[in-house]
Amino acid sequence: MTASRLWVLALVTLCSGCEGMLEVSTPTTPPDDSDWPPKNVPSTQGTPATPPTGTTPPDPTVPGPTPNPPTMTDPGGTTVTCGAPPAARVWRLSHRQYDAAARAVLPVTSTPASTFEAETSGSGFTNGADTAYVSAALAADYFDAAEALAAQAVQHLDVLLPCTPADPANAACVKTFIERTGLRVFRTPLDTAQQARFFALFQKGTTPTQGVQMVLEAMLQSPGFLYRFELGGPGASGAQVPLTSYELASALSFLVWNAPPDDALLAAAKSGGLDTPAGVDAQVDRLVADPRARDFLWRFLAEDFQVGALETTTKDGAAFPAFTPALVADLQAEAHAFADDVVWNGAGTLSALLTADYSMLNQSLAGFYGVSGVTGTALRKVSLPTGQRAGLLTQGSFLAVRGDARSGSPVQRGLFVRERLLCQEMPAPPPNVIDTLPAPSATNTTRGRYQAHLSASSCAACHRLMDPIGFAFENYDGIGKWRTTENGVPVDASGELVSTKAINGTFTGALALANTLAQAREVSDCVAVSYFRYGLGRRDTPADACSVLAMKDAFAASGGKLATLARALVHTPGFAIRTRP
Image 1: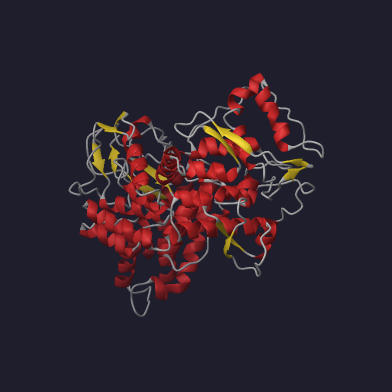
Image 2: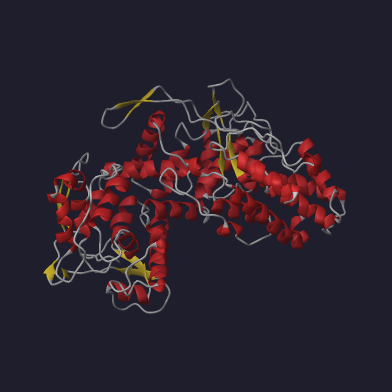
């Protein structure tokens, strides 16, 4: 194993300790071979955060949002107590962010992170900071990716180097390259000493081109590239400090674009353009108006509504022969195109996402949904059969994910509504409960089988909160095809909402349920909370009560406009202020 590989394995793994809290000063370039492997490297678990080399000292003059007020009052008159802002932290890039960051800095188009080890779920989403650790395997992936990306990049020195001709033997040109590329890689300027170290590394190359390649490899393995720093300015332990201007620029860009800040945002950070709320709002509006904003919002919706899990959903081939890879691809494309159209071309609201009477279909999907008059492979806007479908919850993507291998699942569909749209987490089943529902057959119905939950004393207390909601979807089988009978028995899609804040009652069918949910403030609030968790990569805590309330109120005041969620989050007290460890 080479010294540089040992360096990245030890360094990057250390940086993943507890949301990346660092104790040691971390170099941006590998030390000499004689110093490695490191001896008795200390653990970083629970230790204070220290900015790594590759970041500039925080600017204490940069103002931030006003610290949390002591209390806030919700629309119902309930007063909540505001806690301290979240702790300073270091947040590892997600795999998608890694690829986006590499493409933003280098003249490359590859996506090496697509082959990295799978990410785990935290905060209910896959971008959770609390699960963004770096294993030895992922550290090795980073090493290999840095080598490959750097090798690809130096094939385009005319793009990479800021001089004409692009001559890597030109020392002044290389120094300018290090300064400019360092700013883009680390998302903050390099100081003079850091630039000198990278130039010294460049000089170790056997050829000028190899020297440039070595600089890129080192930069791409640095914590300054692999992590997002949210440490804030200097202050005593427990002090509430604003993020530095460059930290704020990264926070805004990764929130809206899921990618690093562009030149305009970095320039705003340098010039003081992020020093005022108006300046921040102007940048948020610019970012949201850019087509790149669509990806992050879609990723949120795909995870929150769980349609992104369709590609790993399996079905019994005998029960659902139509569930082919081609259908899966079409259903995924439909959900994505539909959400994009609602958010960016249509009403843009949560209500429309839940109740729109159209979808984006091609000929194959039209056949699946029983819609005539659609030809070709391209998706286009098509009205849906009246009374059968409306909104994302009646699309095959959602229904297939929330179905069993051989049938639909009232439990899974009702559980989704209870947890993801009402934000009421259900407890795990007691360890001594054995769920032995009758297997699907030609003589029973899905509703009939699941009624057993409601008649069993050990099951009824919890299943009463899920199954009657899920019965609303009985007109759809396990992959989302419409039906009015099951095994010759008329479908009963009547259901009931209980234990909600304001929408208890009975209904019949998924469309009636969706209409009820679309008008409910508690559903709007729940989606706002989910975005808070997704955008910040962590679950909310009691200390976040005022930030969460502000998020809910702003989203509701917008009429549930999904594209306003980013600005609503930026305006919360906890977005741009950190508590010093």
